[in-house]
Image (tube, rainbow, N blue to C red):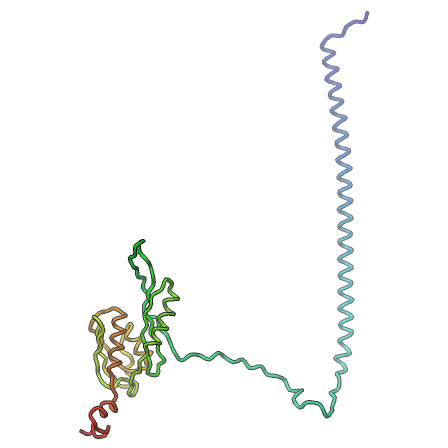
Length: 265
């Protein structure tokens, strides 16, 4: 009869067998891992060698191409081709063409924005916002106009005001860089008084009145705003005053006299 082993020995044998199995598995895994690492390193070394060989081939090809180009250019520079002479040769072939850049013609009309304001209009659904632009248009040679327009955008409002200002142009009689006589213009609640000035005085005005007078081409003048301070009213009052100006010849024709007779009377 075989003697039975105690339970403690049975448990210890089982534990030792499990440990031996785990050690064998770890050895197998380490061997496979090292083999894969070696293979990967070999593949990377091969790829690096291939890239280096390709780069060296490219550099050699470019160097050969540069040498061939230089070899072909040197004889051409040393021996220039002689000019052919014949009956059919054009006279102007040897001349160089000079390119001329033509500048775009600048317009003589000048625009000056006096005011841009935001206005609202009450409609059924609420309030409609828009922009109002006041623009003075003139050429500095006796022609000037005032334009006022509204639009949903500022740029469109300015463009519409410029177009309206060109439609409302007037001709201003200028006498020696100033106006012929004093005058007062009125528009709504605005009133502007204009007086001629001597040479060197300059334009004594401000705001919309100054813009109108400068773009009209007047260099010496005295002015005073007597009514509303609104730029639109001031500009329209100035335009009314300039419309009412008359030259000496116009007054002489109305009176039925010549210019000398009217001045000597």
